[in-house]
Amino acid sequence: MNLIDVTIVNVAIPSLRDDLAASSAEIEWVVAAYIVAFALGLLPFGRLGDVVGRKLMFLLGVAGFTVASMLCGVSPTIDVLVVARALQGLTGAMMMPQVLALVQVTFPPQERGFAFSFFGVTAGLASVAGPLAGGALISADLYDLAWRPIFLVNLPVGLFAVIAGWRLIPRAEPGKRQVIDAGGVLLAAATVFAVIIPLVEGRELGWPLWCFALLVAALPLAVGFVFWERHRARRGASQLLPISLISNRNFLVGLAMASTLFAGIPGFFFVVAMVLQVGFHYSPLESGLATVPFPVGVFIASIVSGRFGSRMARARLMTGPLILTAGMVTLYLVVGRIADSISATSLILPLFLSGLGLGITIAPLFTTILTVVEPRDAGSGSGALQSFQQIGGALGVALAGEIFFSTLAGSTTASGYRDAFTAALIYQVAIFLTLAFLASRLKVPGTRRHTPAPVVAEG
Image 1 (tube, rainbow, N blue to C red):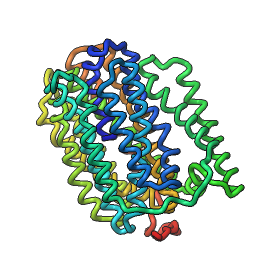
Image 2 (cartoon, rainbow, N blue to C red):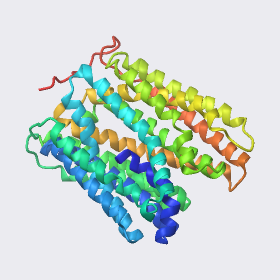
Image 3 (cartoon, helix red, strand yellow):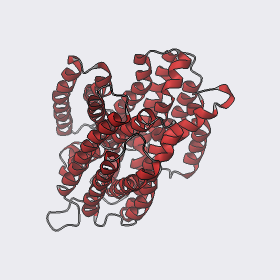
Image 4 (cartoon, rainbow, N blue to C red):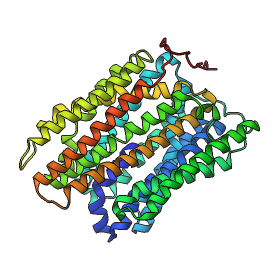
């Protein structure tokens, strides 16, 4: 529900604008309210799961997300919809960190890679299922509800998830009772806010000075957060993000890799949707169908990669981005030859190849990052990981969008969209090559070049 919800709304924007008589700024906040609330909530809710119990937090998050989806679906005005979307983001932040945390503490090390591979499958399928589902639901216009079914469809799914989660997720004792690190929450929220808001709003507003001021302010806020966490560690007090993680090289490189990967994927699909739907007049459903080879590649590669567990992790983390790069280069060559139209069949090979690259990367990335996280801190580590994913995704959409629209320069011709697409693909190639380089800097347990990081046994 969470991953699809990020993309499904984009398809409904024209219908939303017309039905609710919303301005461009108000429509922007239908998307932005969700992203901002979600990013702000990940770290504190991830830590709260460590304290009060991950199963409880997950079920509360899913139930809250389902209620918020109902509020979105029945919203009478754009203002109510924006508030409901913010509530969706907060409740999404309650449930998402618990997913990776539950994998970390439930499965033994030899099974985690395969379990994490299903997270990759989910992410890949959601990247295309959102536009597909949105296009199909809006085209069907069920009961003359226009855009509202894209939110109401979450009700049966959420109800099923609550019941299944209650019965199937193993019971676990909550963590040791701790005082929540309020100072850490405020500093982390301020840092994420200072990064996310400019990235989400900057391009649409023409990058005003305050956007750059907030981005600059994020650095001292982040430094202040680290000093605060060190101060609490010296006092023996609980920390929002344990200092053992902040000072762990592998964890930090892993966060940089997660940010880099997600600085490529969402931005890529944002540009693809613009090119196919606006540049070459595909319907939302046709656009979604054209990109199906990507999640097919993700699905196949994730299953195969997951069976390796933690073996050959660095090799897979370098190979996956290189295959992603090959997919982007192939797509660049294909798009460079088009004239007035683009055939969906010509996209099959490059998109399938790119999906294979992502599927190979996902499982070892999450396994390697979270290996160094002790079970008692799994929620906090997962929240940090997904916070950096959100920051990377917002950065990627901002950069890819800026390159794309500045190259497009107002052109409405097929050749203009082709040139803007190829310019954005150069950015994708650079991103995935950077990801391969970062993978080479990882010190994966089991190699002979370093002293392995201790792995805490499950208890």
